[in-house]
Length: 370
Image (tube, rainbow, N blue to C red; front, side):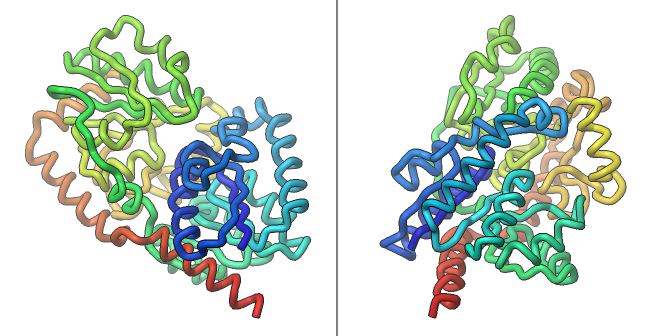
């Protein structure tokens, strides 16, 4: 069968790559076409139609700056799907782009699956009506989403979370000798420029080596301005899991990486800063701190704070330094965090989610073609 996948950022590329492997295993005749990144390209053994780095955005201000490129990519994707005629289009996260693709495909009778659907439990609940209308099935990845989507009347399948697959399949190798602090400043340029200077200032005051995890779509030039003058710092690409595994503590820009750190077992502090417009959006649309008490998926899965989140004005070098010092020196504090991590792991399920989702998608396609 023919599968068209669309992913718009690094985490979607990761999950898309594992899903492609699951689809190939269950369907030896599978043929793929996709918007994605290097990991999906490796799994499919072909290049993407468009690499996700061409359209990755963070918040309303970034969307406005890249509006022209996003619209061109959207038009290209629609035409490419129409010309290629897939058996199913599989949307992976990235709702601003993918919801428009869902509407386009539905109007043309193309089967649509949404893997890692929009987080309507956090904002824009009106999208639930669109999910019901435009998407055949959503494939959720967090256990707390099941009851929410059931009450919303959105057809869903839950087969576990794909991150344990990615971690279980990784062969860990120590990235350096000695102790060090991991810094994961995000995958977008805007995240790096906001997060890394503060993290480097805090880490430098602690007098420890720093390993910065370089994002797949970035180059050393994206990090160089912020690590100059810090001889203890080094940027490494394609070593994120290794860097997390052996770090004494991690400073992480909120995102998939914070959940990965919890599953791997790395004590962490989550940091997040954005433009004034994006911060307003988070407070008034997402209602961070009100409707949803946390921005980190690990804390949301647990239902309480396993690790601290330093947001906007609270994200400064003094606060980061103090929290990392506690992670390094306060053994009971670390142990409580690691115990909470075990609860988070159990809620995610074990390895095998990607293959299970692939089989469920294939079964759904076959059930509607008999």
